[in-house]
Amino acid sequence: MSYILSQRSNGCIFCEKPRENKDKENYILSRDKHGFAILNAFPYNNGHLMIAPYRHVPNIEDLSDEEFLSIFSLLKRWVEVIKMELKPDGFNIGMNIGKAAGAGIEGHIHIHVVPRWIGDVNFMPVISETKVISEHLDVTYEKLVAGWRRMEGCRGRDRTKP
Image 1 (tube, rainbow, N blue to C red):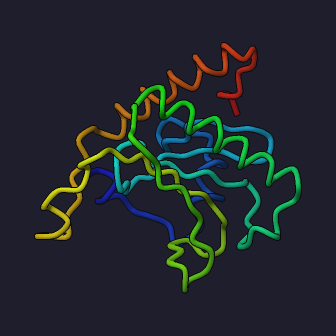
Image 2: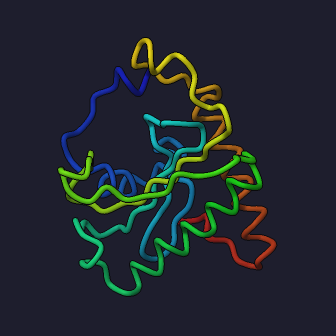
């Protein structure tokens, strides 16, 4: 509720949030040289995160090779962490590029990662256009960051620091 009632900027969250260096408050889960992962503040499901490059670009073809490899490497590793920590039955993974495709933030390309469980849709969206999230974002954040640290520690690298 505090997020909903807070003053929000009309700027780009994918540009602003990483610059604030308040990763926990902004739900930034991890960073690397060219991109980062952030929990969606209005998730479709628990664990719904987004992966974006730091650079403000609207199209996939605008990404440098390094940015492309960065965000898709983050995608691969975050799917692994979510599987380990949240045990979903599947995923919806995608990019909405352009207004016609449903992009909420048109100017900054990003990948949505939405964990899915069998039976995760109930009557609430049908009856009242309301989605019920069963776990607070802070709890999901802590769970996923801990999983990231364990996974990255096993790989001999820690990319949790900006």
